[in-house]
Length: 205
Image 1: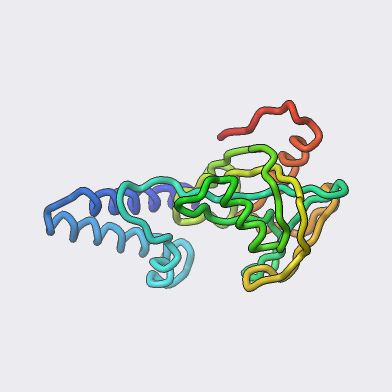
Image 2: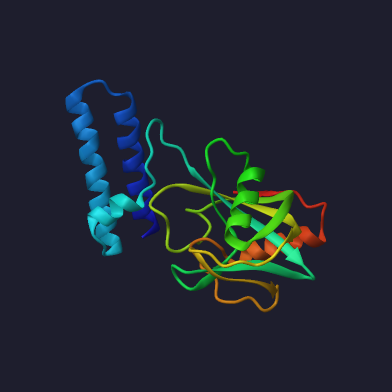
């Protein structure tokens, strides 16, 4: 399935780039049709409706590039902060999509505040992972780079919100069921390794 998702992503990228640079109306129509075909292909392998698939893709124009997902590793009393996502009732490192106009540090600080109620300070970059290579399931129908940061807890208190049903700290040896589309057990252990060994260099796929 991963090979099919990669091919679909490439077709979507060709469509997007073609629409951005083509001046010929017939070529633009063909590129639009490529996007429809890509949605139908993804709907076929995901067993979902093509219209829902179109809404799932992040709207974008211009030259197609990878999206950036930011995730924070916040450790307190030898436990790591996780959030329970309402969409699948599983746990993940707090975070989300980067926003235009924000630095990565600003983005992850905002995401953690929105999802957990805690204020954090970014300590260091732990890893940059390619979502298509690293075993995350299900795969997003876009190409995603994931940036993981070791962060310090400043203040605040745990708060639920429209996306998060629970916020808690867990022992590294007693993790709950993870939402594997966003967070792998390996990601948490990478953060823990950097927490205990500040001399390690960031991991980059």
